[in-house]
Image (cartoon, rainbow, N blue to C red; front, side, top):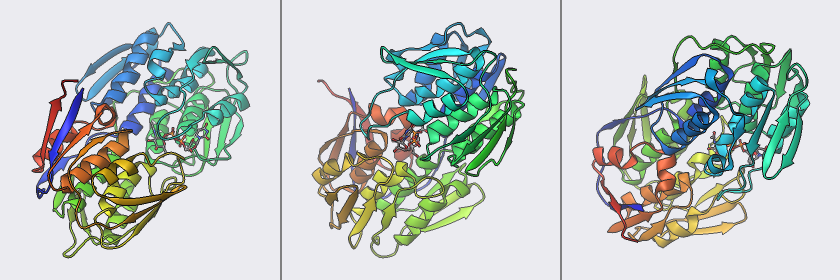
Length: 425
Ligand code: UD1
């Protein structure tokens, strides 16, 4: 198994380019199922989660031509509507094929994804929305078996009692080929949702309220969608935030190119609270570190446009060496603090009470062996290692490979001492 060996204390400098957002690309790939003609996608991040979903489409019978950062998916040749456990258990987001398979083919079976390191993560909201549209759903043998009513799914009023990114995406895709109008109330408003809405619109579906919590989708009435132009994936705001945190924790000036500053606002605000300055020029941002020590930060994770849970671990790493105690409250996932004990192994002083972490300041972190537990927790450990004195080995980096394209290459380009190695065990 590969691990990362990082010797901390190096100043970073220079600029790197940001790739496409994994979390935007996954629903875009799933939405290719809504077409019986080829869909072209560009600026795709070359990461494991993307390859996993493409493999699932391939198993379903779609023709997938994937090269580097582009893919051409022809879902006209799909013959199977069973999303198998072997793939879905590797990646929860595979549940995103449920809505499109059901609405296009009238029936499908999708393995239940199960839990994951950051919490229970049920799919009840996804299922309730499809049921509101007339689907009959049964859970059998670990699979969700969904059947649409005769003639196809029917537009409905879907009211979410909790905001869910994935459930909003599944409902949007199901509604795109349904009969009549589907209203989604309390929808997620993430930029990734906006990208999906724009794709569906380009495919011929009218959607009102894009970017708001109330969406109205005028379904195509069973007609497959046609995406005539390639879809270019939006920049990854979590990758952007992670590299800005790399600049902050090493007190370095770093520049990121090909960003969307609008999507980065809550991250920039928190970095500025900590004493950094972010200079945005078009699609570039340069982070300047504070003159003195980093200041403390108080964070409560929330749905977009609030502070993203996917940036919580990285900010916790930065906060470990701030001048005062920081408080970080996780509101979205009940178990998303797996990085705390590993950060403490590097010399941090973090205390947990329920869903709040108190990050007490330390003067210095020290290199050690640590274990990655989930995607964003892994990047927090890498960030801490960049600031730590001595050498850190971050193990189980397959979590990182799921969502960061060439993390070690990009950090090395900024001057970090980071190498990917193979362990004998
Ligand atoms: C997506 C992102 C993930 C991010 C999360 C929150 C992708 C591929 N992943 O995950 O990186 O951390 O949004 O911004 O885009 N919930 C239910 N019932 C459901 C669905 C969700 O109770 O049916 C709960 C979850 O357990 C969680 C909350 O709703 O507490 C938000 O989850 P959700 O927005 O659905 O996250 P994902 O779409 O899985």
